[in-house]
Image (cartoon, rainbow, N blue to C red):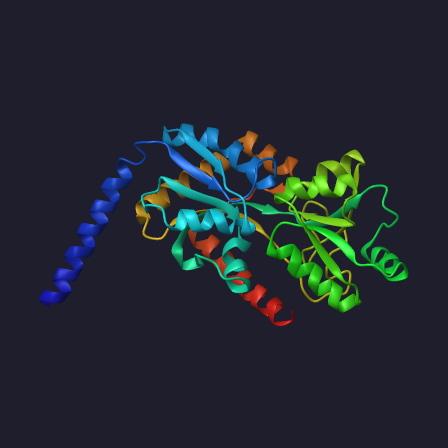
Length: 311
C-alpha cells in the first residue's frame, strides 16, 4: 500500500511539474530542424507554418535546414538535443519508418515523441517534358531496346526502394543519381540529366507549366490530388509508398509540452497561408495529432518491412 501510494504521489508530482513547465512554455525561441534542403516541399510547408505558429505560441520559430541521409542527419542531431520542446524535427515519415530498418542509423524511432503529421506527400515519378516516353512501360522498353540502364534522381531510401523493385521486376538496371531533396530532383529532371525523378509534390507546378510530365504515382492507390495519374497498383505492382511530413521532439519531452505544441500546430495548420503552401506543392495539409502520427508510423514501418524482404 505504501509503495502504491508513493508511486501515485510521485506520478502526481511529475504531472504537476510537467503541467507547470508547459504553462510557462515557451519562454524562448523554438528551433525547427528540417531534414531536407531549402526549396523543397518539406521546407516550404514548414516555413509557411512558422509565422502563425509563432503568433499562437507568442515566440519566434527558427528554421534550420540540415539535409542528408533522407532526414537521418537531422534526426540524429535532434535525438541528442535537450528534451525540453525547444528543438523539433520536421522530416518525412520514412526517416523513422524506413531508414532505421534499411541502414545503420545513429537514432531510432523510439528516440522521439511525435507531435503531429502536418501534410501528406503526393509522391510521383516525373521526367522532362521532351523525353521520348509518356509512361513507365515506354521508358522500360526504350532502356531495353538501347541496352542501357535507367538513371533516376535519388535523395532518400524510398525512391531507391521503389526503383530497385521495379528494376528487378522489369529486368532493367537502375542507377541512382544523388541529389539534395525534392528541389534537387526537380533540377536534375528539368536539366535532362536523368531519365526520371521522384518528389513528394515539387513535381506538380512543373507538370502544370508543361516543363515536366508525371509518369506514375509511387503510392499503391491513386493520389488524392492527382486521381488521373496511374498508381503502382495500376501498373501491376503489389507495393506502394505513402509519405508524410511529421513534426517530432526528442524522447522525454514533457507530455504537456507535446500536447501544447500539437494543439498549436493544429490551429496554425488551419491558416489559409499554410494550406496554400501545402497545396502549391501538391501536398494534402491534413493535420493528425500525436497518437495518430505514432500509428501512421507503425503502419508504414510494417509496410516497409514487407518491401525490404522482397529486395
